[in-house]
Every structure is written in structure tokens, then in C-alpha cells.
Length: 179
Ligand code: FES
Image (cartoon, rainbow, N blue to C red):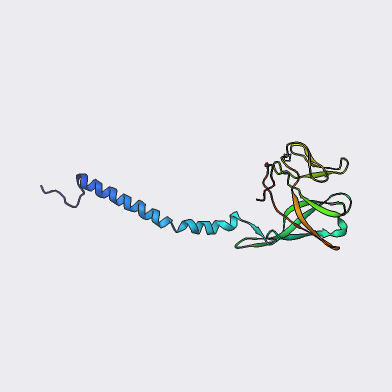
């Protein structure tokens, strides 16, 4: 009886099979290459939210509001990505205090692990409720595990308005480093 020549046989057939698999895997891999930058493009806006302040100065309030005790202000800006613009999103907060006639603004984010800094008018100290760090009115660490002073934010003021440039900083390190 004659053998069916259309059927793969022995070592040759197995080599052909492996070659086909190899070509298939290689082709599939090559087809994925253009997807890598495409996925990066699609993901970029999700991973990199931007605000229209673009690190610029945001209005914090009227100059006359910032005298005496520290004042907490919420800072708002439009949040934009590749597809959306969401107006007036709170991007952060600051404590603003008048020292010797000029204003200083501190981020409300604790430099230790990022809890919200509060102010105690009785002790006249900034405090972090999470691990009991406390800070003087000039932002220096007085107690607790915070590795550095409160993070200052750039402030601009004229007779009428106060604006603040809001940034975020790395937590848990001794040196203030923008992130
Ligand atoms: S997060 Fe503020 S002291 Fe730990």
C-alpha cells in the first residue's frame, strides 16, 4: 500500500512544524511593535494629568485677607488632559502667613508622609495629626518624624491680590525636591 505523501513525516515534518511556529511567534511580535508607542500615547493623558495653571501662579485671595493668624486657602485651576477640560478643580491647599509684613505660603502636605497639615491657634504651631510632627510659624520642625521643614510655595503679592504657585514635593526625604 502506497504512503500518503501529503502527510508530514519524521524529522523533516517536525522541523517544518517548528519553523511555522517560529515564524508565527516572530510575526506576532513584529505586529506588536507599533502598538507600544500607540499605547503610550493613549495612556499619557491618564498618567499625566495637567492643570491649566501649568505650574503657574493661582489666585489665592485678596491681600487684605492675609493678616494676623495663618489662613488656609484652597487653590483651584482647570484640569486638562488630551480629551477633557474640567474647570475649577482643587489642586491643593496652602497655609499663608504674614511674617514681618510679607507673606509666606506653606504647602499643606506634610513632608513626612503626606498627611494634611493643620494649625493650632492656641499653641501657634502647625501640626500633623498622623505622626505628631509639629512646626513653628516659620515652618521649622519642632517635634516628630518630619525629615524637613514645611515646604514653602512661591507667593506673589501686590496691594490687591495674592497668587501662589502650587507644586508638590517628594515626601520622606530631607531635601525639598519637586515631583
Ligand atoms: S505624615 Fe505628617 S508626621 Fe507623618
